[in-house]
Image 1 (cartoon, protein in one colour):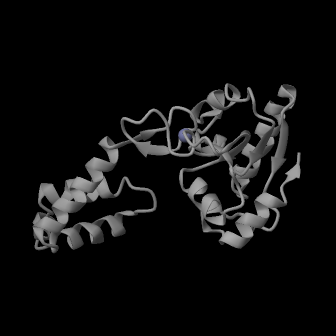
Image 2 (cartoon, helix red, strand yellow):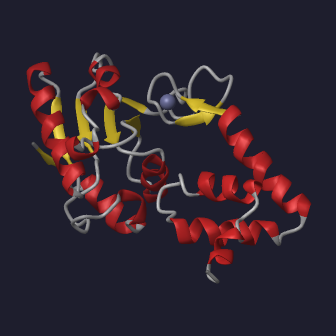
Image 3 (cartoon, helix red, strand yellow):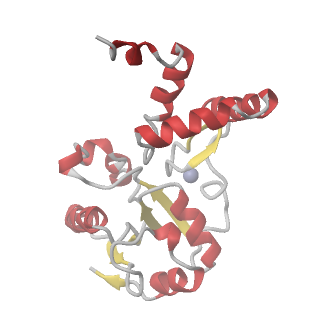
Length: 206
Ligand code: ZN
């Protein structure tokens, strides 16, 4: 007797729902989700509406380029890189995320095409070859003279590069790997432009 009253204090269901949905985001634990929910509750309504709209528009207004699988605005035939006649169509740079081509473009050393895998092989997390855009990559090799493996230097990124190098061997297409000069365990998007530019220029055959 006497302590039972504590449990009667509960969050309203709208707040619980918000905390639950925020908690689904990568890198957001229960504590962070709760903090974000209270933060949003205290912001002006128009600010929260703008965020909600941006979330929905990002989902409905964007899609994957059917050629390279990078992110592009909905309704286009393909992305700006794939449709650019000045790009070297013999070079294909394979990356993990849509953030990577952006980082590589900033470095300014590369003028070929991209292929976005949308992840890296990670058997422990249930990510196998079927979860990535590998089949589509195999179908793009006509007219390609070199595939540059620009996956990250994490364990998963290296495993993916090794897997791809093996898979691409019978095709006869030259395969190279960047990463020299990149910090081990690093994601491409966090590398500075000079390092990234050098990593691409100094790529090595595998
Ligand atoms: Zn594209």
